[in-house]
Length: 279
Image 1 (cartoon, rainbow, N blue to C red):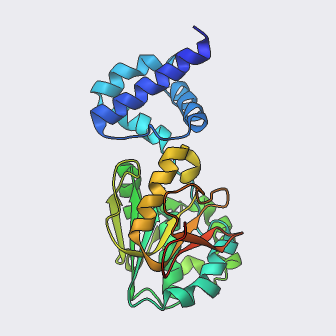
Image 2 (spheres, rainbow, N blue to C red; image 1 turned 120 degrees about the vertical axis):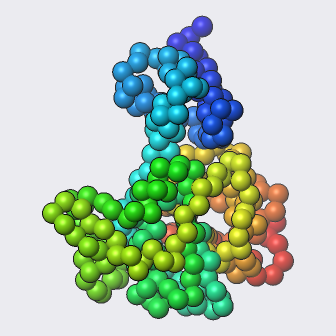
Image 3 (spheres, rainbow, N blue to C red; image 1 turned 45 degrees about the vertical axis):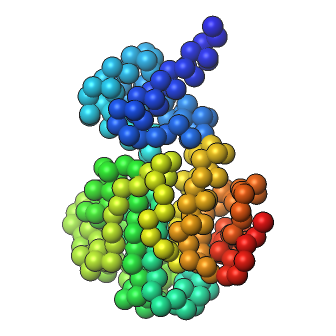
């Protein structure tokens, strides 16, 4: 049997172990991305092949968590991709303000930078009192880290530049308490945020939303899982609500029912049909 086929079997066995033993379903993830992350996991473990990790993943919660972290590794910055945030600030805010209340579902919390970018922006445009942010992730460790709201200070200059390019006019440092090595988000920006564990591969919509942010998550999913996720998003969004994807992501065109139309194509904003269905 070719060596690459053995590696494919090892990956499928590890995914089965995580799903059946610990309830984490990564079987719908794109295989090319999984292979890269599994190679990193093998290197980190010091093992010579993935199958040697299976016993510990099955019986050791710490080993299982290490595998889960390797697969769901986050990538996040404050105000990442400033034109997107500038569009929310100067264009989308007026549409969001038309809703009596604004439930925002931010998918994939990472280490919290995007979540708190959103909280800061809502504060600056005056929508924080009518908005509720629910941020979700499959990984409890990431949720717990995000709740704390603490990051190394070394990235502060780059994040300040992102904030300014996104249209921010204030003092970015004022949103944090700082010491020599870390910055901590001020407590007032935690009050409108709920952190919830949610698995897009298994769980359904759990609240009615007016805005969903899911950036750079779907690129790791296979085609069938992407379709499932869009059905969940369409169910969750109120008519006239908005969806934001990452720049490399787009809506599947062969959904049974398409209710999301392009709203701003370049920045990947979509809007749920106000009347009827798009088929």
